[in-house]
Each structure stands twice: as structure tokens, then as C-alpha cells.
Image (cartoon, rainbow over all chains, first blue to last red; front, side, top):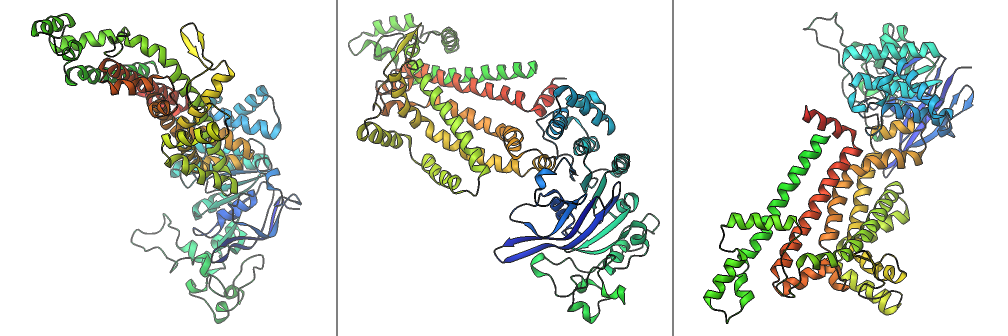
Length: 310
Length: 327
């Protein structure tokens, strides 16, 4: 039994012009201690998937189908029972993720007390410990968020997210707002903490470099659908879906020459109210076949693409 | 911190000196006081003698210095109309105004913040929408009309509350209070609501707007993701962040409750300093007017000072800036 299992996840947003489907048939599993990358362009539904796991989809959006299970138990019906305690989350911008008026130690103690019912002294000790684990001196617990740098604040955020020993951590672009050198530190920290505790991570990012460096498996999303899923090495080196191939080809590398133009996927992702018929990617795909325009390819556990099947 | 405090106090003193200058110049430029005091029959020798006695022949800077020095000691001269000491008149009437302001300020703050939070949290609800619609009345109706309407409904039609005056007054060592008797409270209710209604609706709308803004912030989302209960998020995390900008406006509003209770005091014949001021204006009683001006200045300056200090207490980011400015 896998740790976290998402099956046929469907998220809908009712609007005046009809119902928009933000996520459709998203399915994946996550094992203990595993890091699964979710990648795709902006608006592909990566963050929406993370929000759905947390049960934090902004109304009027809601889960319209599928199920999410944690160790075999459904969690999508009462997400508030699992949020923060069994599943933690790290957000993109550490500068705005912390309450500016509360000492970081107090924010940690608050989380610890709520989830473990600790008394003050124990919570305080555990808070110091949690800070220590992310490489912040315990004595800085009396400091306010503005007294920390971006990287340090993201460490505090990670300490907060992991304070209650969650089984799964959803990390939504945890390093996008940080300097490159800090990015590596934070990723290494996340990786190490999760390996030690056996926490599974859903790492949401649009950065292929982060994916290659950190994840065990990758799920590629396009317009709210999973288009490819596989071991990181396999997806990066033997991508089967033309969209994944395009993403890989458009990632800058240090090895490439300065004059060499980066590959671009033509066009832009369509809006949710104008999803093309057939395969959603076909208008931008240079390998589109006649059936791509009329039939949507099924996800077969590895990819959803007629071209790579044939 | 202490440096900031010191800086603020110096600024406050400077502002008060300017207010004193305006108050002082009222004597010089609103007619000749000697003319008024002696009347038509006096000879020019009498006038010169009085001028000499009042120190009006001294250089203007010296007169100003004397005015400020007297004011600091609570000496504002004698009322032209009644011959009473202005300081005594004010100290007799100030308790009435301060008590009225205290009650209506508390009413405005508590209800304003409470309703503001409620309408922000239950943004879509019918009750919240109705409160928002009704609050427009509070913002747009002039004070005197609200006062008259309240009198008509609660005093004339229902006869629940007195329509004017301040009753049930008890003297507490020089401070006359109406807060100790039922009668006193009954006479306070209508003027307090009249005076505070506008501030209440203003604070409510401000709190609502700020709260909605704060609830969109990332740290609120992160708090939810940490599994903190909605109730705790609203009242512990969001409310405190909401109050920072609200304090400024609320502070100034409380100031104007004290300073500009004139209309309410007139409508309800409330024996406070506002009513005293309006009477002083009828009779061109300059010492009273100038003392009132100084009083209003002191009220606003001290409230602003208090608001600045409150900021430092609430917002740790400002404390950091203040100590950086020091070093």
C-alpha cells in the first residue's frame, strides 16, 4: 500500500459561463520517503493538485471526483483532520508565509501545541529542536520573521511544516523565490529531513533542474491532466510525450553554447474555458495525428499520447 | 525606543506651540479687547492705562511667551461674558464631554471592530450584507439628524430615555460623573450613540476591508495549511494584522469625538465643553475660544502620540526601524 494515493482527481470551478474543469483524472501514488515532482507550465494544475491534497481549494472550486487516500484512508472528505498534522505544506514565498507579528518560536509552539497537545515547556523544547534541525540556532526563536533572510525564513517555514511530523509534505515551489545558491541548500535540507523521517514529498516546480536534482519520480501535467509519469531519470532522458520532450528541450543547460537558441514550444497553454477537443496539447504539438484532434488519449500509467503509443 | 519616544514628544511640543500661536493671535486680530472690556464711554487715557495693565504694550514676542507660560500653568484668563476664570469653566465642563466621548468611543470601537470582523468573515451571508447596507446610513446621515431622529423615536414616541440634559450627576472630588447612577446612564445613551455612530460605521467598514485584505495573505494560507483552526486564524493571526492600519484612523476618530462633540452637545443640551464653545462663539468670548482651541490641540497631539507608541508595541518591524534610526 502506498503512502499517498491520488485517484482520478477532478476539480471543478463553477463560473457564470459554465463549469471549468481545473483538474481531470489526475492519478498518482507516493511512497514513504519518496520525492515525487509535479512539473508543468504555469496554470497546468500543479498547485491545484497540491491544494486538493491539502483540502485547501479556494471556493467556489471543489473536488468533483476521484479520491485521495493516506495509508489507505480517505482524507478528501474531512481534510481538516489531516491538514497540518498528517500532511504539511511549504509555500513558494518565505517572505510572506510567516505571520509578521508573531515570534517564530511562538508560531512553532502554536503548531506543536495544536497537534500534539504539549504543555508550554515541552513545546518550547520541541520548538528549539525543530529549529536546530533546519540549521537555525535555538536562541533565535524569539526573533520576528523580518529579522531573517529569505533562505532562513524558508528554513523556518520548513521547520513549521515538519513540526508535527507529517507523513506527507506538499512543497509548492519551495525554492522559486530564493537565490540559486540558497535553492540548493533548501532542497538538500528537504531531501535529508524527509529521508530521515520517511516523509513523502510532493514537490511542485516548473524548474527541470530542481526536478533532476531532487526527485525520484516525475509527473508532468498539462492543462489539468497528467501527460507523463515515470522515474526521473527515465522521464528526463527518454521522454515519451512530445510536451515533456519540449519542456526538456527548452531547459537551459550550462553545456549549451551561448549562441544556440533554446527550443520553444510554440503557442501558449489554452485557457480553461477553451480547451481544445481531443488531446489538449494537439494544437501545439508538431507530431499531432488525425486522431489527436478528435479523441483524448487515455493515461496508461506512463503517458497519455497516441503518437508515443504508435 | 526611548529615543523615538523623546523625538515624538519634542514634535508634539512643537505642534502645540504652533496651536498656541494661533490661539494667541485670536486676541490680537479678532477685534480690540480693550474696546470690548471698557465700552464706548471710556476715555483714551483709560484705554491706555488698561492696555498698560494687561501688558498689551509689550513686544508681541513677549506677550506670546507670557500667553504660553500662563497656558502651561492652566491659566487662560477670564471669560469676557461671565467674568469667570476660563480654567474653572473648562474643568467644570470637561468631565461631561470626556465621559460622553469615552462611552461613545468605546461603543464605536467595540461595535466597529466586532461588526467589521463579522462582516469580513461572513462576507457572503445575508446578515453581513444587511449590516453593510445599513452602515451606509450611518456614514451618510449628518449627526444632528441622527440625534433628532433618536430623540423622536426613543424619547418622544417610546418615552424610554430622556431627550436632553445630563442627570444623575455625582461629584467625585471635583470630577462630576454620571456613570454611577442609572439616571446618568439613561441620559448618556442617546448622545453617546449619536456621537459614535459615524465613527462606528467608519471603523467597521475599515476593519472589514483590512480584514479581507489580510485574509488573502500567504501567512493566513500557511496557517491554514499548518492545521490551525479557522477561529484561531481569524482572531489571533488575522485580527492583529488588521488592527495596525485601523489604529491610525481610530485614533484620529476618537480625537474628533472629544473635540467636535459640539453638534451632539447642542442637540442634547449636554453641558460639556462643546456647548460652552458654541456659546462662546455667539458672544465673541475670545479667552474661552482660544482655550478651547488649545484643548483640542492637546487632545489631538496626545492621541497621535499614543497611536505612535501603540504602533511600536504592536508591530515588531517598527521597533527594529526605530532602533536602527537611533544607532
